[in-house]
Image (cartoon, rainbow, N blue to C red; front, side, top):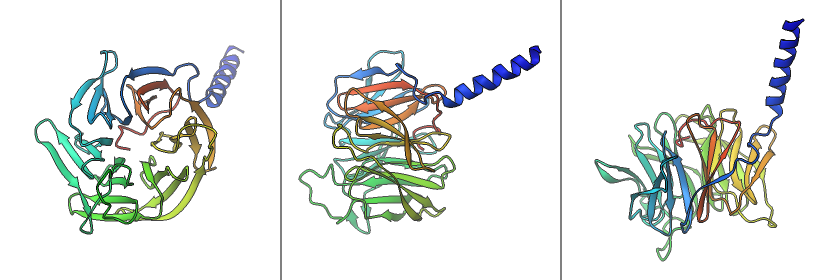
Amino acid sequence: MIAGLAAAWTAGALAAEETAPLIVEGSLELAATGYTFTEGPAWDGARLIFSDIPGDTVYVLTPGEGAPEVLYTPSANANGHTFDREGRLLNAEHGSGEITRRTSEGGRQTVAARYEGKRLNSPNDVVVRSDGLILFTDPPYGLGQRAAELAFSGVFALDEASGRMVLIDDALSRPNGLALSPDERVLYVGDTATQTLWAYDLAADGTASGKRLVADVTDESKPGRVDGVRVDTAGRVWFTCPGGICVVDPARGEVIERLATPKRATNLAWGGADLSELYITALTDVYRVRTRARGTGSSSR
């Protein structure tokens, strides 16, 4: 009888866990404030890296140790960040129009600056596959007074060892955030201009096929747009959207959960000891919220 009750309780607890909201209610908190326009959150295993783009500065936030500190400045108006296979920081720079690597030993190194001889627009966000393949988006947001040399906004894959760069897509209006599925076979890209999320089947050589619409979250009644994109270990896609954060089941193409943010969300990253915390950049602020999901690893994916 006791064993039966225990089994019934366990089954009930598991069922409750499966139906519990992914985002822990009431856990959204302010982690940092006082910036101009925050972007590019990336977790290095213990700290959060993020940009203040107009402030031309990259900061590091160590949980429990007070206000963020300057990691480096000037930053060439860096936007997105991630880490390569050796844990070195990669940056998508608006000001320079380059993907760069920065280390304390070697300083700043250009990784990608041109495609077919033409200067990139203003790389926006960047991710790295586990074999080292670098994927990034290149809309024109950071061009400023600089004339565009490319006549499109691209999604690119770069094999750094060979220098081979593959154009994955040149048809999105404003490709922005991007992320890889847990098995790295699918690439997700958000298009800010059309408020849509797209998926591609990604081959070993960086070429892509099977482009398909995952979700259209257009809603002009709410502030915010499709921008940053992340994926959890269950394959769900988390991304900024009108009103805050949307969670999509890509198999169904449905928004299954939402989080309203106090200010317009610009990007997001998994963090915390078990990668269950979500850090959200939102205009002048950085927020943190607890979830019942797990990130797919460091912000490289």
